[in-house]
Image (cartoon, rainbow, N blue to C red; front, top):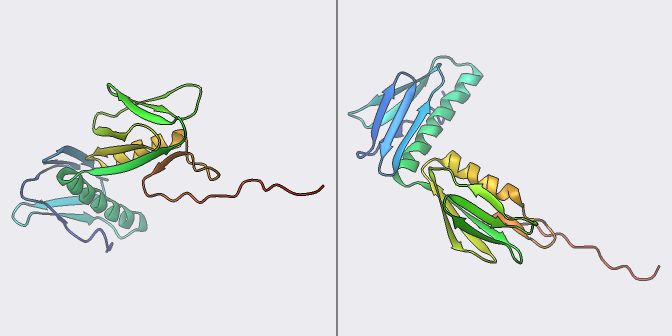
Length: 186
């Protein structure tokens, strides 16, 4: 058995779970999430015990991996529906800033043009401090979508190791490098 996959997923009382063949729909306080599971994985929901149990059809290595993955995805869906997920981002640099215009995040990252990023419909972006260091909070119910959008923002201008300028996650430590040293003589 997979150590992760064999653990049941607890379902809070105010969450509704619907399993239709291999499609799972979970409704809660913050919205609805859907997941389609692999054909070799079975998902059972016992209404009386308020838990979801994930089972696999074979003990092959790839099915063991899918077993744990499916259980982890379902657990993340429960957390997302109840509390949601968020990532904090800092944009450090002179003249770097962030603002929201309608459904678009506009970043000034030292390029000759502003960077426009359309915000996905299930994601909420909040600008806490628009200027240096600019602070953003990306939040939503889908952990994968929150992480992916945060990574896309960071990829626009990753922090560089000499001055530390760029986009980084809050709390991320950028290892600094020494610049070129002046040599004497010659």
